[in-house]
Image 1 (tube, protein in one colour):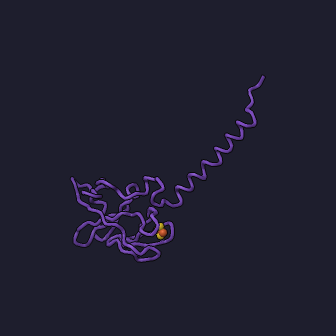
Image 2: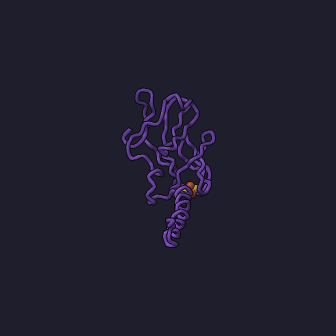
Image 3: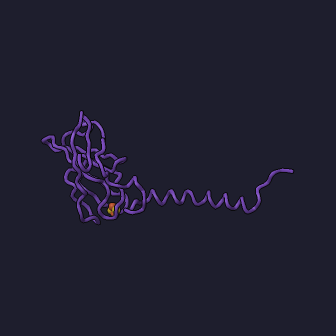
Length: 143
Ligand code: FES
């Protein structure tokens, strides 16, 4: 006798398959604070981001994995900011030149100062400590 799934077990499998993609979309759409998505958080300890040479004078680099942007002024000084949007907590994933663009509602920030250049956000990005250790950029609280 062939082994057939019962109607109940087939329904269970289909329901599980349909729910999984929706859950994934929910997480990707917007990472508001408190949703448990650790990927959308400001570093709570110093993190190593990359080689110092990656950020030329007058430019900025976005480190999406750590939600940090680093910019270098004309005098060579580094600045680092959290890229968690101050409007509703989405992780900013786009850097055009030195302008950060939030995917959720379009706020824009200057990566050199952290200041808002386009609403709806009104508060600047949170500045992080930054330093260079053995040629690598390290940023975050206590760096
Ligand atoms: Fe960034 Fe709304 S969360 S613009």
